[in-house]
Amino acid sequence: MFPRFCFSLILLTPALLQSQPYDLVLSNGRVLDPASNLDAIRNVAIRNGKIAAITTNKLQARRTIDVTNHVIAPGFIDLHSHGQTPENYRLKARDGVTTALELEIGVPHVQQWYAEREGKALVNFGASVGHVPVRMVVMKDTGVWLPKDHAITKPSTPEDRSALKSLLETGLREGALGIGFGFGYTPKAGTDELQEMFAIAGKWNRVAFVHMRHGAMGDPGIAASIHEVLALALVSGAPTHIVHLGASSTRKFDQAIAMVETARRRGLDITAESYPYIAGMTRIETAIFDPGFQQRLGMTEADMLWVETGERLTPETFAKYRKQGGFVATFTNTEEMIRKNMAHPLIMIASDGIMENGKGHPRAAGTYARVLGRYVREEKALTLMDAIRKMSLMPAQRLEAMSPAMRNKGRIQVGADADITVFNPATVKDEATFDKPALPSTGIPYVLVAGIPVVDNGATVETTLPGKGIRAP
Image (cartoon, rainbow, N blue to C red; front, side):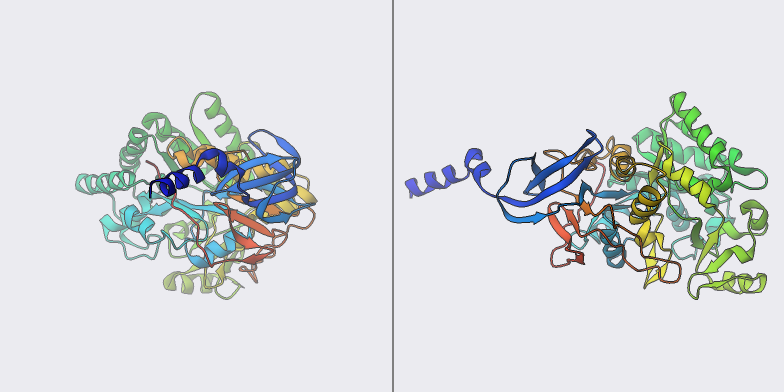
């Protein structure tokens, strides 16, 4: 017995373990690492879910995949992914996403939300605790996902605010990545209420993810929206991230991003994101479309598309569907502004996507391939390295102060998590449209999560579900 036991110990020594073949090697690929700016042909080896070697030397592995003429990039990290279901995770993986996070609206019950997904997710997942859903709980709102009645119309009492704070702190204690805020969805959440909730984010040093209150057009406009966010961030000390800044600012993006730049120069910890589409989408029954929305959003009913049928709305059908409730796409932006969004060095890429039974906005399926195919290859609005940085490293860096797991993502480096996307820069393309929003992207043949292929030679693989929950400690 004793000699056999010693022999087992010898087999497990680090030196002998390193001599064993790697689990997987991606050979002859163009490695793009935004952290080091490496852009070179390399072989990348993976062992036990980590990147174990990056070299020009030939490597031995249980499986080798020749990815000549393809890019080896860090897996994309979507900070704004409402669709947190197997249907959405499949589309995310085909679009190169390895981590999908629900941070804008967030969730009300963090521990339960994570438990429902552990061991069942194709990609990594995570969430904030949301002021909007928590307000829906406290106010007993009857809405589906977003507020429909009491959370919209009811100002909070001191007792309500105490309950809100308690639920938010519970969520942070359970590992939420921040606090989500949707000012536009909770118009009766006044400055006093929001200041108290922002103070919690500041106390815990967790990011406040904010959907601003006003549209860019009309009165009070984009400046007032950004002023409100900046004031709350300054007074509370909360790190702050403005979601879909491009969609919120539309034709006034230049003004909006200049304000963010100035705030950053003055020391505020504030970041922003955008998606590459001229249309947004939300639920028609929400406060966003309360009377006067035409002036606030700079649009009419004809600029709205009813997602279920694909029809453009009229005042009559708008009234009908508002009573019914459901998703509506809003065409309020321009291609000129989208190009500026994508090119600006401060802007991260995030989808704001959700798909339900094949119905939704094409951004749920095609955001990342659209940036790579249209705005990098065709429009040349930004470089390939900059696009990869906006999709991987920058989102990881936004979260790594409160989630150590993110320090190992967004990078192609030895020791980093083997969350990797392999795509063909000459062919990568978004296929999803408003007519067919659930078409998966093409030109992304391999996607690895923890070194396990979830997209293999262009096909989704669900025999293993390697996605892990991303939490704060």
